[in-house]
Image (cartoon, rainbow, N blue to C red; front, side, top):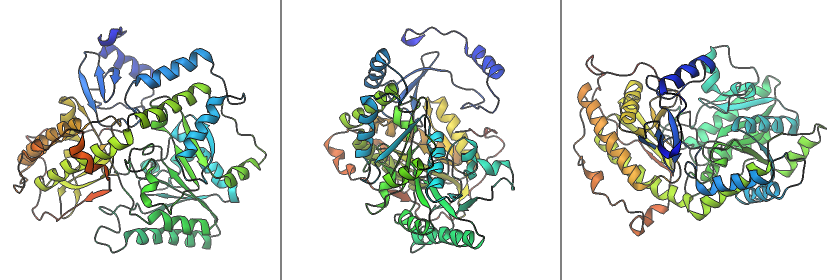
Amino acid sequence: MPGGMEERYSKAETLALRRKHIGPSCKVFFAKDPLKIVRAQGQYMFDETGEKYLDCINNVAHVGHSHPYVTKAATKQMELLNTNSRFLHDNLVQYAQRLAATLPEKLSVCYFVNSGSEANDLALRLARQYHGHQDVITLENAYHGHLTSLIDISPYKFNQLGKDSKKEFVHVAPSPDIYRGKYREDHPDPASAYAEEVKKIIEETQKNGRKIAAFIAESMQSCGGQVIPPVGYFQKVAEYVRAAGGVFIADEVQVGFGRVGKHFWAFQLQGEDFVPDIVTMGKPIGNGHPMSCVVTTREIAESFGASGLEYFNTFGGNPVSCAIGLAVLDVIEKEDLQGNAARVGNYLLELLAEQKEKHPLVGDIRGVGLFVGVDLVKDQQKRTPATAEALHLIYKLKEQKILLSADGPHRNVLKFKPPMCFTMENAKHVVEKIDVLLTEIEEATGMKTGNNISANAQCKRKTNEGGSQAESANESTSHMNGAACRQENGFYPEKCSVPSKRIIT
């Protein structure tokens, strides 16, 4: 075994034991041939044979797998003390102070919990206590966690349960998707148009004698297909929701902690004039350690306290978790990972934009920092989702030791959300492999590859991470849909093998 680890079971034995003892609803990546991962370092994962895989999907190992600074901080504190937050400890208050310093001034009160789901569940409690309202507005294709309270407000999940699965207190607004949504890139003001849809929901709800407690949205939708809301949308929605006595919850569980490059928090892409009432965070916060946080205003926190119920979380805010959280913040700053996200993310977007010009399968490239989606289509004019093609490509990338996933309501959007130490060389390597695979798929299906860009153009680009890329640090949101392709794109012929089961991400 690599790294001096002893393998207790063969891969086949591990899989058999998993099937015997782990619930069948707990899925694995690449179900036809799942990976057995035994160690990881930086942006790489290693299987039981020592094979190295480039990890393009793990936004939990935010500063890199097994970062020595983070593991040292955890070990050092574990050797001293780990207890609950009912005892005074400097780690708790120091970490709360450090986190609050990254946010707008009014967001200053922290509640520490253990997962993104716990954070969003607590955010709903805070919102409902604030004015005594109950109803929640969520977005199409939204996912906010696995607790019952969160499945209720996650169309990404509850739509799988049937047409009667939506609860009466839940209201679903259109996803602010300017590529596939109701108002697209040719609309003069999609932000206002999508916000008006929320306003209509509020008005209809009030007519029915119901009251809005909260609007909740991921600052950028991840499971929904890497959707980046148009600038100004959150401001207008917040105005309508607050006028109705509700609060705005920004879910940063997937996208926070510098991933977008220019800003530390993705909601800041909307502009300095937007400040949520509650922010939830998780996944990257502990670099793989189970921890999360809810940050809100003093006013909302005091309202929650006025209920008379004590809030206590056994493990939330324990000294070890806070030591790890502090270490993650240190690494982001010391290694300039936020700057790296901007530089590498811009370079990745440039490479993918070249692929869009070349390949009719690529319908849209959208992203900011190291949060990027590639929307694959069978027909650019109709924007028909290329679901089978996306999953075929992901399995082929796995064969070439690259881990990528597909998501969105049609499972046709390639998702890039790698560890923040991802490099320009990594980006170049992945896109080169995608280029070859797209060409193979298009040849097999009779789709024509564009010839207005050299097949090797991306190979000629400089990839040093020094001064020649400095201009890329001025990060901007990219949404490249371009002109529609008018040719009819074919389906897979019988000779082309496509996996029949979709990958769950």
